[in-house]
Image (cartoon, rainbow over all chains, first blue to last red):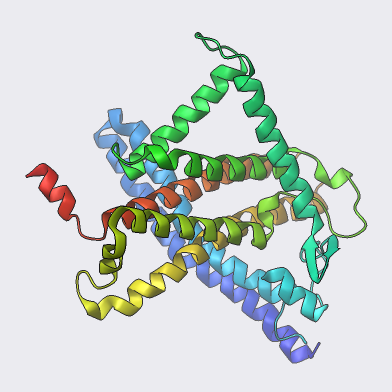
Length: 82
Length: 253
C-alpha cells in the first residue's frame, strides 16, 4: 500500500471517531442532566424517565458508532488501498 | 459491504480478526460460513425454547412457559407502545422476531466462548457483527413498513412524500434510504465495537479487568436489540399514520 494513503487513512480513522464523539458527548450530557433534574423534581416518575433516557442515549451513541464504522472501514477494509 | 471491500484489497493495516471470514463456496457466491453457523445456532436455540414452552401448556404457567409468556408480554407492550392499541396485533410476530433474534445473537456472541472452536479461517462470533446480517434485517424492516403503508392507505401512502410541502420531496425520498442505513450501521457498529474493545482489553490484561466491560457489553447489546425493535415498530407506525397527525385530531375532537 502507498505509505501516504496508509498514513492518511490512519489519521482519518482517528479523526473520524474522535470528532464523532464530541457532539453525542455534549448531547448525552445534556440529556442525562435533564433526566436527573426531572427525577429530582418528580421521583415517582423515575422508572419512565430512566427507560426513555436509556433509549435516547443509545440513539446518540449510534452517531459516534457511525464515525467508528467509517474508521473501521478505513483500517480494515480500506477502499483506497488497491 | 465491509467484507466485500476487504476481499477486493487483501491488505490490512492492523491484524485483528476483522474481515477474515470462513468462506463457503456455493456456485458463484462466497458465503460467510461462520455467520451461518452461529445464526443457525441462535435459530435452533429460539426454536427449542419456544418448543419447550408450548409443549405442555398449563392454565397456570410455570418454568419455561412462564418465562416465555413474560417475554411475549414484553414484546406485545413494546409493539403496543409504538404502533398503538388498534393496529399492533399483526405486527407483534415481526417485531418480536427481530427483537429475539438480535437479542439472542448479541448475547450468544458475548456469553458463549465461541473462540475456543477453531475454524480454518476467521472466527465464530455474534451473527450481528457481520454487516450482511444487519443489512438484511434492516432491509426486511424497510419492506415491512412499505407493506404496512400500502396495505393500510393504498396509493395514498405516496402522499406522505409531498404532504407538508413538495419542496421536501428529495429529503422524504432520502429518508427511505437513510432509515435502513442507520439501522444496520447502528447495530453492526455497536456489536463489532463491543467485541473489539473486549478483544483489545483481553490482549492487554487477560484476567478480571475486561469483566466490567463485558458486563457493559451485555447491557448495550440488550439495549441495541430493544432499539432496533422499537425503531422498526416506530417506522411501521409512521408508514401507517402518515407524517401529519390528522387522524389523531379527529379522534380527539
